[in-house]
Image (cartoon, rainbow, N blue to C red; front, side):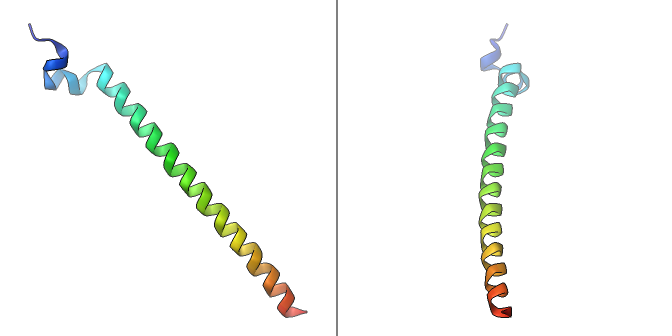
Length: 59
């Protein structure tokens, strides 16, 4: 009888591996979402500045 932790096939398909992989993927996804949100906020700020500059040029 093999211990599950030492059998690579069982370890890769086991509940512990799946839970750890899911946790890692969730963390990576949250990091990407945070980075995307920060980038979107920067774009919104620059667009607001551009809109103000355009309004001043039209006056």
